[in-house]
Amino acid sequence: MLLVVLSLVSVVPLIGLGLFALDHLGKVFKSIDEVRVAGRALSVSSNVDREINGLIAAGGSLAAAEPLARGDFRTFYDQAKLSMIYAQANVILVDLSMQQVVNTRVPFGTALPKTANPENARRVIETGKFDVSDIFFGKVAQSRVFNVTLPVLVGSEVRYVLIVASEPKRIETVFAQQLLPEGWRAAASDRRGIVFASTDPELIGQKIDYRHEDRSHADPAVTDADINGHASILSFHQSQVTGWTTSVYVPHAVLDAPLAEAWNNLYMASLLAVTFGVLIAYLFQLPLANLIRQTLAAAGELGKPGPIPQIRSFLSEGVDIRDRLMQLDAELRSSQREAEEGKALLDTLLEHVPEGITVVGGPDFRVIANSKKAVELSGRRVEQLNVLAADHAESFGIWFRDGVTRPVVEQLPLYRASRLGESISEEYFLVRRPDGTEIAIEVSVNPVRDGAGRIIGAVSCWRDV
Image (cartoon, rainbow, N blue to C red; front, top):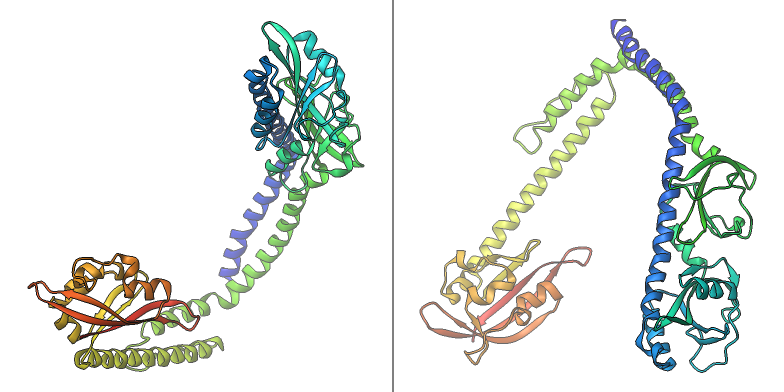
């Protein structure tokens, strides 16, 4: 009974603390959510601006291109086409009559119409400053586009207007890169308030009611809104670069889901904690602890002489554990015997085989064994020969038959077999011993593979010829 009381004393205060914490969190979650959404809105808006600023910089560089000053449109076309490969945009050059002169979307020399967005072009001619358009339908592109328009100065006069044209999917790519949480949505609308890019395709072409006349503050505005029939928290920010409004919105159901799930989890956890805490304390705590102690003691005897100690417990699992330990002990002893027998057999083979045998293995394919004959033929000590397969040309004193050229690592039979899986038969080399004497050797090597076909080593057989 004391264990039951202790279990309740430890669980009930934790449950009460959890209830209090969740109640308090529910009151402050709305403020936290507003801060999170506003932070995301500002981040998304900044990244959209960064994308547009990249187009402005690229266009500004082209607007200052020397071929334009001398009217060399062919050279300018090639230069613009090349510079926009990675920007994934098109360059349009428009004269003061709004006639397109160059359009990298089509081959040079193609008959071109007047620009489909003359308002921005005229505004740039009048102000001498860049301008970012709303979304419109491009005549040549035959799709929705927006323009980043810049003046082209020849001397101090605006001679042309340079347009960097791109598609709304560029902004949707920026949204995708933000890795918004599940259920969060982002949208961008032009100065008319029409949504042209969004992670929610149903919003494209719609208007969002921002309920604020001034959207240009440095900090994003936050409000409640009804988006596609879902009550949501909406945060938005108007760019000083484009005039567009970028927004992030999250349905309340999405934001409230973790808290609702936490309440449910807490209720279930409380019930389970009380129930199982009492049962475990009353029925199983001491027997389980005793069983674990006996199991650990028996496991420590695996592979040692003598029988496995008895496990005494009223729990049926105690018998199963001892049976399994006895099985593991038998398997371990059998593996030990096989390993010892295999080593003895290999040692005998390497001691008496009348050929040079060299074995490489392990994760780094190091020489792990040499026959007695291999050591004698090399004229070196055993410890000098236990090197990486890639280094054994130097350690064994291996040369090509001309006695002048030493093989590089990719030409060594052991390396080729262990790394590339080649089977080599009857290749000839020289072994130069430390005393200066040389012997000609014939080498055959085969890779060693495991049951899955992976190369785990190689065996080389070589002889004095």
